Length: 315
Ligand code: 8YV
Image: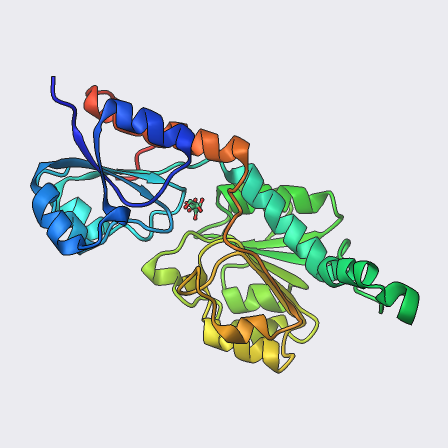
Protein backbone atom coordinates (compact mmCIF):
# COMPACT_ATOMS: atom_id res chain seq x y z
CA UNK A 1 0.00 0.00 0.00
CA UNK A 2 1.36 3.43 -0.82
CA UNK A 3 2.05 5.59 2.18
CA UNK A 4 0.11 8.85 2.62
CA UNK A 5 2.11 11.91 1.63
CA UNK A 6 2.83 14.40 4.40
CA UNK A 7 4.15 17.95 4.16
CA UNK A 8 6.44 18.68 7.10
CA UNK A 9 6.68 22.41 7.82
CA UNK A 10 9.59 22.53 10.25
CA UNK A 11 12.24 20.43 11.91
CA UNK A 12 11.26 18.03 14.70
CA UNK A 13 13.33 16.04 17.19
CA UNK A 14 14.94 12.86 15.81
CA UNK A 15 12.57 10.70 17.86
CA UNK A 16 9.68 12.15 15.83
CA UNK A 17 11.43 12.39 12.47
CA UNK A 18 12.17 8.67 12.30
CA UNK A 19 8.66 7.30 12.99
CA UNK A 20 7.14 10.00 10.78
CA UNK A 21 9.31 8.89 7.88
CA UNK A 22 8.55 5.26 8.58
CA UNK A 23 4.79 5.76 8.37
CA UNK A 24 4.52 8.37 5.64
CA UNK A 25 6.16 9.72 2.56
CA UNK A 26 7.44 12.95 4.06
CA UNK A 27 8.20 16.12 2.08
CA UNK A 28 10.31 18.60 4.02
CA UNK A 29 9.00 22.05 3.12
CA UNK A 30 11.46 23.83 5.41
CA UNK A 31 14.44 22.44 3.49
CA UNK A 32 13.21 23.47 0.04
CA UNK A 33 15.09 26.32 -1.58
CA UNK A 34 12.40 27.20 -4.11
CA UNK A 35 9.29 26.94 -1.89
CA UNK A 36 6.79 27.79 -4.65
CA UNK A 37 8.33 25.28 -7.06
CA UNK A 38 8.43 22.64 -4.32
CA UNK A 39 4.76 23.18 -3.45
CA UNK A 40 3.74 23.09 -7.13
CA UNK A 41 5.49 19.72 -7.45
CA UNK A 42 4.42 17.92 -4.26
CA UNK A 43 1.29 19.88 -3.24
CA UNK A 44 -1.25 17.91 -5.34
CA UNK A 45 -0.39 14.64 -3.54
CA UNK A 46 -0.25 15.96 0.03
CA UNK A 47 -2.91 14.47 2.35
CA UNK A 48 -1.57 15.73 5.68
CA UNK A 49 0.50 18.60 7.03
CA UNK A 50 2.67 18.08 10.12
CA UNK A 51 3.49 21.50 11.51
CA UNK A 52 4.56 23.28 14.68
CA UNK A 53 2.67 25.80 16.78
CA UNK A 54 5.02 28.56 15.73
CA UNK A 55 4.84 27.71 12.00
CA UNK A 56 1.22 26.74 11.39
CA UNK A 57 0.00 26.58 7.79
CA UNK A 58 -0.98 29.62 5.72
CA UNK A 59 -3.94 29.90 3.37
CA UNK A 60 -1.44 29.84 0.49
CA UNK A 61 0.07 26.53 1.58
CA UNK A 62 -3.34 25.00 2.23
CA UNK A 63 -4.48 26.12 -1.23
CA UNK A 64 -1.44 24.47 -2.80
CA UNK A 65 -2.54 21.11 -1.33
CA UNK A 66 -5.95 20.33 -2.93
CA UNK A 67 -6.08 16.78 -1.49
CA UNK A 68 -5.29 17.92 2.07
CA UNK A 69 -7.32 16.13 4.77
CA UNK A 70 -5.64 17.00 8.07
CA UNK A 71 -3.22 19.44 9.68
CA UNK A 72 -1.60 18.06 12.82
CA UNK A 73 0.02 20.76 14.97
CA UNK A 74 2.93 20.03 17.31
CA UNK A 75 1.88 22.63 19.89
CA UNK A 76 -1.22 23.75 21.73
CA UNK A 77 -1.50 27.03 19.81
CA UNK A 78 -3.00 26.74 16.34
CA UNK A 79 -3.28 30.49 15.68
CA UNK A 80 -0.78 30.22 12.80
CA UNK A 81 -3.05 27.77 10.96
CA UNK A 82 -5.58 29.43 8.65
CA UNK A 83 -8.67 27.93 10.28
CA UNK A 84 -11.09 29.63 7.90
CA UNK A 85 -9.41 27.95 4.94
CA UNK A 86 -9.56 24.59 6.77
CA UNK A 87 -13.22 25.01 7.71
CA UNK A 88 -14.13 25.94 4.16
CA UNK A 89 -12.64 22.69 2.86
CA UNK A 90 -13.50 20.39 5.78
CA UNK A 91 -9.83 19.89 6.66
CA UNK A 92 -9.35 18.56 10.22
CA UNK A 93 -6.97 20.40 12.57
CA UNK A 94 -5.45 18.85 15.69
CA UNK A 95 -3.11 20.21 18.39
CA UNK A 96 -1.26 18.94 21.48
CA UNK A 97 -3.07 20.29 24.57
CA UNK A 98 -2.61 19.10 28.19
CA UNK A 99 0.77 17.42 27.73
CA UNK A 100 2.56 20.79 27.86
CA UNK A 101 0.44 22.54 30.50
CA UNK A 102 2.68 21.87 33.50
CA UNK A 103 5.89 22.91 31.76
CA UNK A 104 4.35 26.15 30.51
CA UNK A 105 3.04 26.97 33.99
CA UNK A 106 6.39 26.06 35.58
CA UNK A 107 8.23 28.42 33.26
CA UNK A 108 5.72 31.22 33.88
CA UNK A 109 6.31 30.94 37.63
CA UNK A 110 10.06 30.69 37.13
CA UNK A 111 10.10 33.80 34.94
CA UNK A 112 8.03 35.72 37.50
CA UNK A 113 10.30 34.74 40.39
CA UNK A 114 13.43 35.48 38.36
CA UNK A 115 12.11 38.90 37.34
CA UNK A 116 10.88 39.87 40.82
CA UNK A 117 14.03 38.77 42.59
CA UNK A 118 16.52 39.77 39.87
CA UNK A 119 17.88 36.22 39.69
CA UNK A 120 19.57 36.69 36.30
CA UNK A 121 21.46 39.91 37.19
CA UNK A 122 22.17 38.45 40.64
CA UNK A 123 23.89 35.46 39.04
CA UNK A 124 26.04 37.84 37.00
CA UNK A 125 26.78 39.82 40.19
CA UNK A 126 28.12 36.71 41.92
CA UNK A 127 29.97 35.39 38.87
CA UNK A 128 31.59 38.64 37.74
CA UNK A 129 33.19 39.53 41.05
CA UNK A 130 30.82 42.48 41.63
CA UNK A 131 29.80 40.86 44.93
CA UNK A 132 33.37 40.98 46.23
CA UNK A 133 34.11 44.36 44.63
CA UNK A 134 30.87 46.24 45.28
CA UNK A 135 29.15 44.37 48.11
CA UNK A 136 25.68 42.84 48.29
CA UNK A 137 23.22 42.93 45.41
CA UNK A 138 20.92 45.99 45.37
CA UNK A 139 17.61 45.03 46.97
CA UNK A 140 14.88 43.42 44.89
CA UNK A 141 11.12 43.10 45.40
CA UNK A 142 9.15 40.38 47.19
CA UNK A 143 7.30 38.07 44.85
CA UNK A 144 4.94 36.13 47.14
CA UNK A 145 1.83 37.35 48.93
CA UNK A 146 0.88 39.89 46.27
CA UNK A 147 -1.96 40.27 43.79
CA UNK A 148 -1.82 38.18 40.60
CA UNK A 149 -4.01 38.64 37.55
CA UNK A 150 -4.33 35.69 35.18
CA UNK A 151 -5.46 36.94 31.78
CA UNK A 152 -7.12 33.86 30.29
CA UNK A 153 -8.04 31.05 32.69
CA UNK A 154 -7.74 28.15 30.25
CA UNK A 155 -5.72 25.00 30.92
CA UNK A 156 -2.39 26.82 31.27
CA UNK A 157 -3.86 29.82 33.11
CA UNK A 158 -5.46 27.41 35.59
CA UNK A 159 -2.14 25.64 36.18
CA UNK A 160 -0.45 29.01 36.71
CA UNK A 161 -3.12 30.13 39.18
CA UNK A 162 -2.95 26.84 41.10
CA UNK A 163 0.80 27.24 41.50
CA UNK A 164 0.37 30.88 42.57
CA UNK A 165 -1.86 29.76 45.43
CA UNK A 166 1.20 28.13 46.96
CA UNK A 167 2.83 31.56 46.99
CA UNK A 168 -0.01 33.09 49.01
CA UNK A 169 -1.12 35.26 46.10
CA UNK A 170 -4.48 36.98 45.90
CA UNK A 171 -5.76 35.74 42.54
CA UNK A 172 -8.02 37.39 39.99
CA UNK A 173 -8.65 36.16 36.46
CA UNK A 174 -10.35 36.88 33.20
CA UNK A 175 -12.14 34.37 31.00
CA UNK A 176 -15.14 34.45 28.68
CA UNK A 177 -17.31 33.76 31.75
CA UNK A 178 -16.69 32.95 35.44
CA UNK A 179 -15.21 29.47 35.93
CA UNK A 180 -16.71 27.10 38.51
CA UNK A 181 -13.23 25.63 39.21
CA UNK A 182 -11.95 29.08 40.17
CA UNK A 183 -13.26 28.83 43.75
CA UNK A 184 -12.74 32.13 45.54
CA UNK A 185 -10.57 33.72 42.85
CA UNK A 186 -12.03 37.01 41.65
CA UNK A 187 -13.49 37.15 38.14
CA UNK A 188 -12.68 40.39 36.31
CA UNK A 189 -13.61 40.17 32.64
CA UNK A 190 -11.99 43.40 31.48
CA UNK A 191 -8.21 43.35 30.87
CA UNK A 192 -7.67 46.94 32.06
CA UNK A 193 -9.61 46.36 35.28
CA UNK A 194 -7.76 43.10 35.86
CA UNK A 195 -4.41 44.86 35.39
CA UNK A 196 -5.44 47.63 37.80
CA UNK A 197 -6.02 44.97 40.48
CA UNK A 198 -2.73 43.13 39.83
CA UNK A 199 0.88 43.43 40.97
CA UNK A 200 1.75 40.84 38.33
CA UNK A 201 -0.26 40.09 35.20
CA UNK A 202 0.20 36.65 33.60
CA UNK A 203 -0.88 36.48 29.95
CA UNK A 204 -2.08 32.93 29.31
CA UNK A 205 -4.59 33.52 26.52
CA UNK A 206 -4.93 31.52 23.34
CA UNK A 207 -4.29 34.00 20.51
CA UNK A 208 -7.32 34.83 18.38
CA UNK A 209 -8.21 37.86 16.26
CA UNK A 210 -10.26 39.12 19.26
CA UNK A 211 -7.31 38.96 21.69
CA UNK A 212 -4.85 40.70 19.34
CA UNK A 213 -3.10 43.51 21.31
CA UNK A 214 -5.48 42.98 24.24
CA UNK A 215 -2.58 44.12 26.41
CA UNK A 216 -2.21 47.67 25.13
CA UNK A 217 -0.91 50.97 26.55
CA UNK A 218 -4.07 51.40 28.64
CA UNK A 219 -3.69 47.96 30.24
CA UNK A 220 0.01 48.58 30.90
CA UNK A 221 -0.72 51.92 32.54
CA UNK A 222 -3.39 50.26 34.68
CA UNK A 223 -0.75 47.72 35.78
CA UNK A 224 1.33 50.74 36.75
CA UNK A 225 4.94 51.54 37.69
CA UNK A 226 5.14 48.79 40.33
CA UNK A 227 3.56 46.15 38.06
CA UNK A 228 5.09 43.13 36.34
CA UNK A 229 3.97 41.44 33.13
CA UNK A 230 4.63 37.79 32.22
CA UNK A 231 3.78 36.47 28.75
CA UNK A 232 4.01 32.77 27.89
CA UNK A 233 1.18 32.82 25.33
CA UNK A 234 1.64 34.54 21.99
CA UNK A 235 3.33 37.83 21.14
CA UNK A 236 0.28 39.14 19.31
CA UNK A 237 -1.70 39.25 22.56
CA UNK A 238 0.45 42.26 23.45
CA UNK A 239 0.98 45.52 21.61
CA UNK A 240 4.76 45.13 21.54
CA UNK A 241 5.51 48.76 20.68
CA UNK A 242 3.35 49.91 23.59
CA UNK A 243 5.16 47.43 25.85
CA UNK A 244 8.59 48.61 24.72
CA UNK A 245 7.55 52.22 25.34
CA UNK A 246 6.23 51.34 28.81
CA UNK A 247 9.41 49.46 29.73
CA UNK A 248 11.72 52.20 28.41
CA UNK A 249 9.76 54.85 30.30
CA UNK A 250 9.50 52.71 33.47
CA UNK A 251 5.70 52.93 33.31
CA UNK A 252 5.72 49.29 34.45
CA UNK A 253 8.46 47.77 36.59
CA UNK A 254 9.30 44.87 34.33
CA UNK A 255 8.29 42.18 31.87
CA UNK A 256 9.22 38.53 31.46
CA UNK A 257 8.58 37.34 27.92
CA UNK A 258 8.84 33.95 26.21
CA UNK A 259 7.34 35.10 22.90
CA UNK A 260 8.05 37.96 20.47
CA UNK A 261 6.67 39.44 17.27
CA UNK A 262 8.82 38.15 14.40
CA UNK A 263 10.62 35.63 16.65
CA UNK A 264 13.29 34.33 16.65
CA UNK A 265 14.47 37.81 15.61
CA UNK A 266 13.88 40.27 18.44
CA UNK A 267 13.23 43.98 18.21
CA UNK A 268 16.68 45.29 19.28
CA UNK A 269 14.92 47.63 21.74
CA UNK A 270 14.28 44.57 23.93
CA UNK A 271 17.96 43.72 24.18
CA UNK A 272 18.79 47.17 25.56
CA UNK A 273 16.34 46.91 28.47
CA UNK A 274 17.44 45.97 31.96
CA UNK A 275 13.86 45.58 33.23
CA UNK A 276 12.97 42.72 30.87
CA UNK A 277 13.66 39.01 31.17
CA UNK A 278 13.84 37.49 27.69
CA UNK A 279 13.31 33.79 26.98
CA UNK A 280 13.57 32.00 23.59
CA UNK A 281 10.00 30.58 23.31
CA UNK A 282 10.78 27.42 25.25
CA UNK A 283 7.87 27.07 27.68
CA UNK A 284 7.14 23.56 26.37
CA UNK A 285 10.81 22.78 25.82
CA UNK A 286 11.55 19.79 28.06
CA UNK A 287 12.40 16.27 26.94
CA UNK A 288 9.33 14.93 28.71
CA UNK A 289 6.87 17.35 27.14
CA UNK A 290 8.37 17.45 23.67
CA UNK A 291 8.29 13.64 23.50
CA UNK A 292 4.63 13.67 24.53
CA UNK A 293 3.83 16.43 22.03
CA UNK A 294 5.47 14.50 19.19
CA UNK A 295 3.63 11.33 20.14
CA UNK A 296 0.29 13.14 20.22
CA UNK A 297 0.95 14.87 16.90
CA UNK A 298 1.69 11.46 15.34
CA UNK A 299 -1.25 9.78 17.14
CA UNK A 300 -3.59 12.30 15.53
CA UNK A 301 -2.19 11.53 12.07
CA UNK A 302 -2.35 7.78 12.68
CA UNK A 303 -5.95 7.96 13.93
CA UNK A 304 -6.95 9.96 10.86
CA UNK A 305 -5.47 7.50 8.40
CA UNK A 306 -6.97 4.57 10.35
CA UNK A 307 -10.40 6.20 10.15
CA UNK A 308 -10.58 6.55 13.93
CA UNK A 309 -11.68 9.53 16.07
CA UNK A 310 -8.92 12.12 16.42
CA UNK A 311 -7.49 12.27 19.98
CA UNK A 312 -7.22 16.06 20.17
CA UNK A 313 -9.25 17.64 17.42
CA UNK A 314 -9.62 21.43 17.17
CA UNK A 315 -11.98 21.46 14.18
C1 8YV B 1 5.73 25.37 20.08
C2 8YV B 1 3.93 26.48 21.25
O1 8YV B 1 4.83 24.61 19.39
O2 8YV B 1 2.45 24.82 22.02
C3 8YV B 1 2.59 25.90 21.46
O3 8YV B 1 1.62 26.55 21.05
O4 8YV B 1 4.08 27.61 20.93
C4 8YV B 1 5.15 25.66 21.44
O5 8YV B 1 4.95 24.53 22.19
C5 8YV B 1 7.04 24.70 20.22
O6 8YV B 1 7.95 25.69 20.41
C6 8YV B 1 7.40 23.89 19.01
O7 8YV B 1 7.63 24.72 17.93
